Image (cartoon, rainbow, N blue to C red; front, side, top):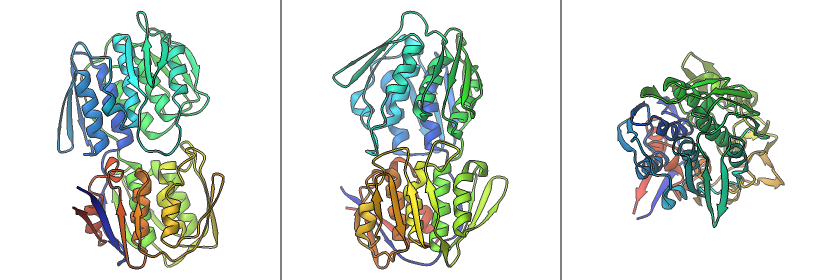
Length: 419
């Protein structure tokens, strides 16, 4: 069976949209739940995404029992876990590497195959593995399998990541939670999802300080206990709908969010001329007839998020003048430009810099190359003349809940076809 989206240029999008829990927050939290030995964890606002289902299957294969009903998830963790992760699941998703820190600190060993996910760059695991070694683990690599082990408990240490990798920050924070003594992680990622993971671990009895800054201090504890926790709102889903409002000249209120987390995007939208209204847990976005060109450079939080690059690129095609978009995180995240150029864009790329001028797009048959490019192509289809057909929807389903349905409610001429 194949699935695709058909989208046509239509009226400006108008209305309200409720934002789901964050994919990038729930996945590490699910992995960290394995630390609640012989207990259970209740999670609220869990989005029904294929990545979440994959992580649930990983946890189940390790011995946990996972029940997901609507937006609630119950994870029951046994006294003893399997330490060899299932290859067919780990290879699907990059975030599955996060169970490594939990298994290593809980069971003293972990066997993990090299993870998969979107083909947007190499994203090496060196920072993770060097960090585990600094905590006292022995690491062996053989035929694409990472074997980690430690005699006794991991030992607290001071470790500088060198680059603020989100995944490495999460993996090492999880591992250090049950380590002996104090661990100081320097040069860490500062994303809101890091803070959410620290808050979750602290709710289970961990002692973590400094999340959201570039130094995190973890005082190791012996055990963690059950807890109930609500997942942070998804700033990338929220940002995608903000761009949808701007690109169609619409008027959308994005609800159930933390506006401060969207400040890097909000700032750029205001620079090009989008009208914004910010509330306590909502943002109103009103599109304008014309926009000014802008220069954007992605970077670790609090800089412009790489996960919004594809969506913003579609909007820059509506701006008068010459815009540039510099990608500093993932070297292969411009693969969707070929698809946009197929629709009539004339974007040129010089190394890691995309140069964009205003162009009229035409509906074509295009293929999503990764999760965020799928959303970017849908947004481009909203302003393209004629009909746009977007294929490879399995990418979209990894990060958006009912994306088509939400756009339909806002007035988009869009449908999802199964054949």
